[in-house]
View 1 (cartoon, rainbow, N blue to C red):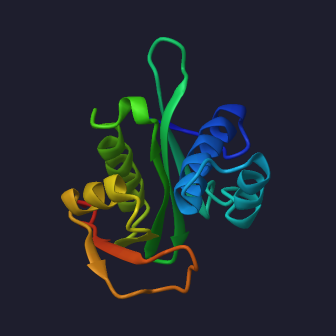
View 2: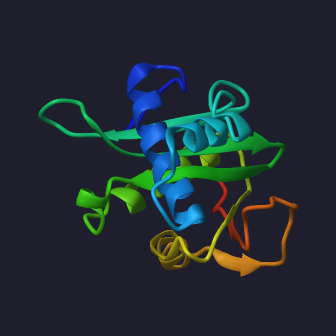
View 3: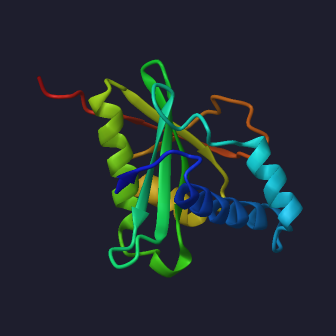
Length: 160
């Protein structure tokens, strides 16, 4: 796992792939380039760096090609898990789990007590991953128009 700045070409590439997939599932058909561009504007990742967040990438060993990503936005002692994605050809290999666990470790190191996220039911692979990792479904904590499921996980405090 590697920390990346959201504007780096490798990060832009994998975030676009993530957005293509999420938008296509939302529309129930391949999303157009304009729809993907609009989705990237509607839900930017530029705050996933520094004091406001983190973006982690999973890269192939042979050519540093991005195969997945996951990020967190910091909001006090709560972090929002976001942009969790693995390429379809690597799903089931544990990369998604390792990405989420790496984001959780970063959150614990900075003193974050809780991770929460919003998602949609048709992203069934993601929902199953979150539940396997101990996230529990909770009542809506935001009014995100594209979400129909909300999850929360309490993190173990950092050892002194």
